[in-house]
Length: 406
Image (tube, rainbow, N blue to C red; front, side, top):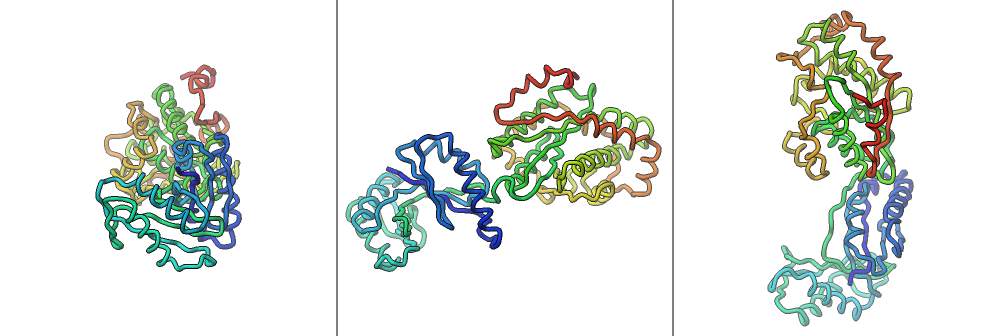
């Protein structure tokens, strides 16, 4: 019955001078993403994108659309010629098919974008509703709070009838807003932050700090698995993962600095490494999963002291989120089950019993000067190992490489 999917654009419709660029990009991404299906036909106007199904199962197409950023919503439609006979006939069939209960309230709502259509929106709604009421049992009109709402969208390209308005990911088209470096651990927060950055059009690279032999390959495998879940939204593009050996830096800090400042000093070193890599690779921002007060390094005082080592903007999509909200999002994007696997990352190995939660910059710098960190940071940057993560990445192949022996 359904023959067209109507796609509505998201926030990009507000971008005025950049609108055409966003429009072209999202249209291209929809077509590229759906090119795996044979027989689909695509066309668009300034405010709508149409997918003609040509008898292709719509469930598969909807599943792929749900992964595309820059789409506000979409609807399964019956497209007919803009005349009352065809509109009424299809309206009756559609309401019969989608009516969830034997008795239900309903409403017909008309959008008359095509002003050449002879009647007003109100008149169209009334005429179609009368036809439906005469032919479908168990209906009662409720114009204020109906359980079933039939929409008739009258446009130059035809009349589109639909009942469901499916919410999409929203945001901006993939890779339309510059590059960011995601500081990814194996925890719950950072992959969610990465997802939110992707949704705003940021092209992601990732950086992960490992500390063998204190961490093992299962912790790294966890990170790769998490990025594979994010790669569902970037396909066919892959996410580059930069792996940093952090053991020497952690041991240097642990052996020479006041244990109270271990977390602060480790985070400062991470930011130095990430910033150095970002500058060399034209990456405009660092991204992480920090949320105010969640751990010792995420108080405002701690973040201010840690930020002091870099001038690169730091994006924290989760900064005001409650943990419950972060967990809910992680479940929605299917990263939660991976994140809770009990494999320690380098951030949890050298944590002191009583870390400083309000460190003073002067004290931190004094402790940092006790350590030979500059050379170790430079060495860590030079020895970064890179791999690319896609939805079909073979994890085992990486661990067979001697570079990943732990």
